[in-house]
Length: 288
Ligand code: GUN
Image (cartoon, rainbow, N blue to C red; front, side, top):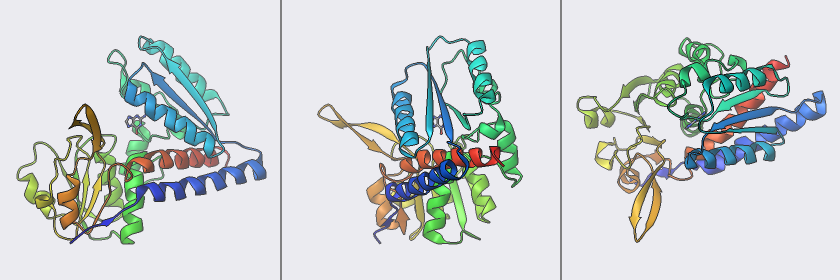
């Protein structure tokens, strides 16, 4: 079998197009421009790339982008004061604090100081609880993007066996909640899971979010299964070059799977598209 390639890049472009239409309607109909504030502390190169990309796509969708770049030695009090200002600013509908934060800052405290209604990452403890109990919440962008791709491919997910490999708060846990919400039978597997290969082999849907390059190989995959690869890992490609790979070994998985997301061009572009969609949602909720 050669898997169907799930084109996240094209799907994300459609989502961004829909967001841009909604933004235009909010401007014309209500005189409101959705605004997204992104806070970056320090100079982590990967974070700088993500933040630049978020700002660019926010503006392309017709929204206001507010970037706050703080020094790596910013104090917790200064960061909390900025978040307090953004919480109170009616032009700001979404707030994102780029993670990871420098080690001297308490990430949990910082995230939980964001107004939950503006928490477009869905990381605030209130949103985590709302998602876990199936209530209306802000949904974390990467798992939301994965769910959209899965719904688009399968239609209904009801009754399917889903295995999420990885138990992070950003992807693994919310992904499992979303799949459960769509009536999958969900297993969360991780580095301590016994017989991991056999567990993954039972899955109709595999979501790999472990951050280990090419860990999931074709012999782990049930023939015809759908493989969603959340990993973005830069590895040495020899001759001084690097290349991006996922958490799945693409070629061997694609031989067995029914459908697979590539890296790059699969889940990655969906994350920012969902961030823009969450910002419009937050803006609409804030304005009744
Ligand atoms: N760092 C890596 N992924 C994310 C994300 O989805 N949101 C934030 N705020 N930081 C991240």
